[in-house]
Image 1 (cartoon, rainbow, N blue to C red):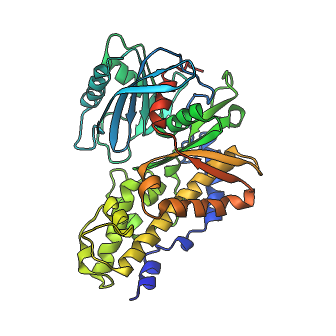
Image 2: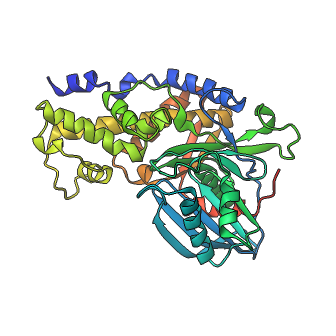
Image 3: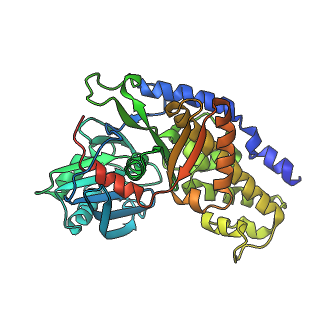
Length: 402
């Protein structure tokens, strides 16, 4: 069997994904999600892009990401510029072994207290939380392989506030993509869409409240940020190795699109493909052993590597990265089309190492997104804003319930 037969047989070629048709289905699912139906949550953040912090008042910011937990103290000056200090980073609790509810929130509370600023907390939480207008929310489910089994079904902000104890006035919760957008928009008002492309994938944008049937009718704001949880989309064809990764995950019924393209899973997807190709004699037997996504990226970039030169192995990996970039582009095109009119340019912020560091991914993502947006006559610009998630969490710490 030759390489192209291998790619076809395992459904790995990006051209096997009908981008416009998948985008059409995605837009339908997004509309359903705004009405409280379907499997894409389209979670209202109850935060406006116009939220402004209070100058001179410090707060604690917590970024609970897919891989790392980051904590810092934040304060804004009179011009709205955020200064971060007392920065601390560690592995996300629950990723190195199962924790109980009390252990998880107790660990977060220890870090908040260590910041020396417990009165106001902005908690950027990279998981599926059903937000409410109090700026708290119920954890619906974990993803990215976090193991705290008794946490879903309970409020995130209130749980951390209780764990921090006396002196904690508020814990305002927001999603990572919402935080990225809020922080970036605070630095550059042209930015209206926020993307996370790292361990996981999520996208947010600002939606008119009268186009969100499931929210209360008495909201004081005209618009709010929607955290799409777009990785829950289940409209892409599955490869052999998608199914392997999905079946091996903690919650195989959840987040299929995320598991087909995001950094937490793409290394395993390529590794499984290499192992199958090595078993079939298409590539060197070295590839029968597992490798990580950073190793794959370095190998494709031509950096010093223990992985042997093998043109077919490189072609498999690049093809799968292209496929992941096309999936991510479809997921991005939906929110862009919802938030921009024909003839406009959508300016977006992207956070995450997959977009910045994975060889070939960024260029292929831009290429595929351009093709998808061309019929709508929407252009796009991508900006990066340093520490946008932490800045966004700090802005959210000063938000008042809608």
